Length: 494
Image (cartoon, rainbow, N blue to C red; front, side, top):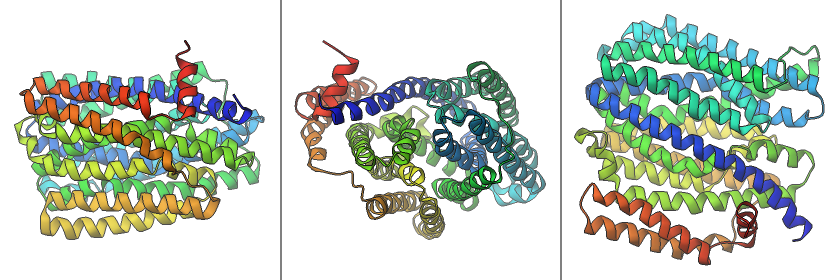
């Protein structure tokens, strides 16, 4: 094996290892999360579940506003100061301060404006008390997110996955799922969200103290403070816009529609989001590795890495997309008969996620190559476009219009990211090797469709694993590149 092949294989081993643990964590999170959602959808009314879905989106948006920026800064600067532990401690301290202070400001604002938000959404079903529980929960989860982000930046992906994929959903299942099972009321469920957040924070702090030798501190170096806060602030603006345009459909529905429609839409959003699993897995260690390669000016290696990760993302997401489309009605029925009405919404959202995966980790690459102003411009322009499109299309077509608006914005944003990376860095991920997986995809899709046509629910569910098995075997036989086989030989030696 040539030196270049050994080098790229080594980097891919790290990314694949991170993906392996991510997949394990995601499997746990998905199963536990699915059970939690099933308990909630079957214990609460569709209207109450719609309010709960809105609350979860509100928490996710608020937590991500500042912790997203601080986590991106951790990825960028911990790699940069890898040989200077004191500076790494300063970066950790500054990130925690930035995240906590910012989230506390958001929480305080929500606490004060709770009557206004309650009046504007669901005609009062979202009470002032519910909003204020959310307000005090936000700073707690912001610290959790920053601590898990620190593990990721230090390339200790197992700890990040333990916090985000095992502990947090596990605690949520025990507390919120238990409440839904034994005392099914929306008020109790919202209180359970706060209790679960406190428990998750306590466990995260213990893990950070036990498994790292980093002690967060505040730097007295003006250059470090200035670089960190400037970078974090711009990335927070970018993340804020990204979170807003990703969730504006739910907020728009909450304002313009009824909570029942929000519940149906949220389940479709949940299922379509599973298509991002491959890209999310490969992206776990991509940012710190990309930052390290960029610091070394090893652009050729960075381009190869980006191209391979993007191809893997497309190969795996396409198979999931086909299975999701064939079995969408069956999968929606798991949540209750009311949710099968979201079939068209699920189709549109899934197309948007497929295009998202086709761009690979383009957003991470822009961030790690210091094009933060470009990221900010992307997110803000797309966020504004999504608000306008969601409003116009929802007024005319209802919830399916909101889904179309979100899918169109996803497509436009990801096409823009790929073009920008090519223009700014001369990096382009696509080549003829991307076409080799299509025959295998056709065979896998045909297998899924055949089983779906021949067998009745619930036996038709065997079609998804059977189709994926046919796809993977076919892919191995005639759809892989040499670098893929090198990696397989590493993990599964003869």
